[in-house]
Length: 360
Ligand code: SR1
Image (cartoon, rainbow, N blue to C red; front, side, top):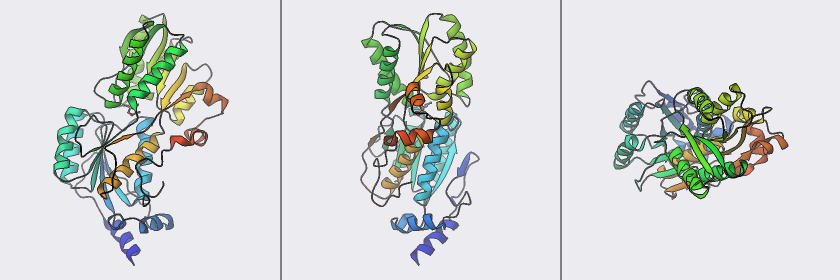
């Protein structure tokens, strides 16, 4: 009886007043019935408020590129398993738009808000406002100090350091290195701190250029800048590009310039990234990464715990793993699915969870 009420209620729920760049992704809004046997079974085991359906606003600064698409798939999967109506907005790297989206989300009084990336100066005043309004907030890749907010990140300072060390090792300890970095994005700022540490400890490393552009087409825009950097620095030994869209842009530029002797150390992983890394003669020799879909699932679980009043640490750190081109080739890894099978620890299913949370 309770189960049929829950299914009916979930089917009727509509999140009022969505803006143009806002879309629903719950099983309801996508037309995938919550009354499928699996979903119904899971919903029946959820706390009362989840059985009736809860609304979580996902306010994104960026959504384009492999990382962000995979992240969303994971978030949607976990939301479906929790009977969560996930309402998504994408500001397409327009910070004013993200502020508008976040204010709109607050006005709609969802059960929780997930802020996915965002400039500290833009999102923090609104995050504070949401907390004051009693809305649980989870922030992914945001520099936030509000003690009520669950802050998730991918151990980025450590990742920047480890990737930098891998580069130093790969070029024999010294040489000209170019670096892609745009300040203001919390994960990039944190990785930058790790790289700064590596440079301090390795006086033979000469950083000859810093470039990169985050946009709706980051890889293409970064490639244009990389062309000029490659021409101006004939002795370049490596490029540190700790974001896959940066790395892809750099790889394309190197290939166009026929520079086969420059190594690329990237960030993130996806099926297309694996294709680029394992292509014959690819300069992309190593990447440091999480499974982005896993990170999206963790963010939704954290919001679910928070809104249910369950305990959760203020800081949630997801570890990154160095994945080399050799490892991918030796293990015939062609897709993210293959990689997950080879490295099951990429799925941190014990992070931010509880007995009542279905595994997705
Ligand atoms: C523009 S920031 C891009 C980064 O955000 C996520 O942390 C991904 O790892 C990506 O590298």
